Image (tube, rainbow, N blue to C red; front, side, top):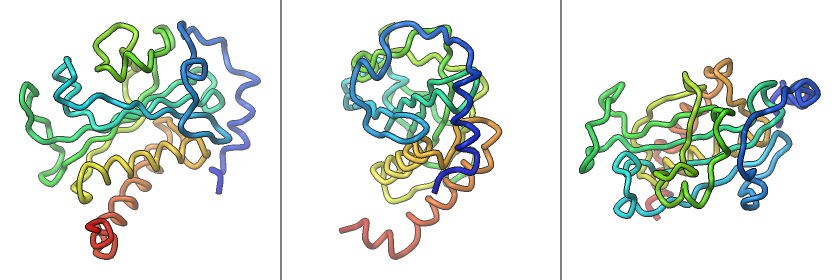
Length: 202
């Protein structure tokens, strides 16, 4: 089922302004991992945490880049970042919004004044200029959530949300924060339910 606004959003390309993103487009760099009526998404294959030169990246579990040119009239590239909130060497203690928080997911719009990120440099650790993620503030959506059975399942939940964006079921815009919050809460509840927890152990 597509988002009720998908048909309207698909017409936005007609009135979208010219973007200033420079560099090689993501489509030219690599085939997307996900396709949908509202765009494409790429999963960044990050280096293991102990091989990342930038300490700030060592808590990062996942990064997804989204090209959704018809979602907003002014922006077309978005990034979704998942981090764990555990204490880690060389990283300042995370601020937890509630005691049980274990993960933080953030959805941001990439600044069109900066080049499109270079996926290979980003995957190397994100410290080189070509791999930087320069986002607009404030974030479109950010939330923390509790343990769902491990990092792999937290990653799976967030990737489901990325798929929902390109499929038109979620919109990466602050006006849709309520929908993002509801979708995340529903996913966390499913993964914490006894039957899913039992299945995840096998």
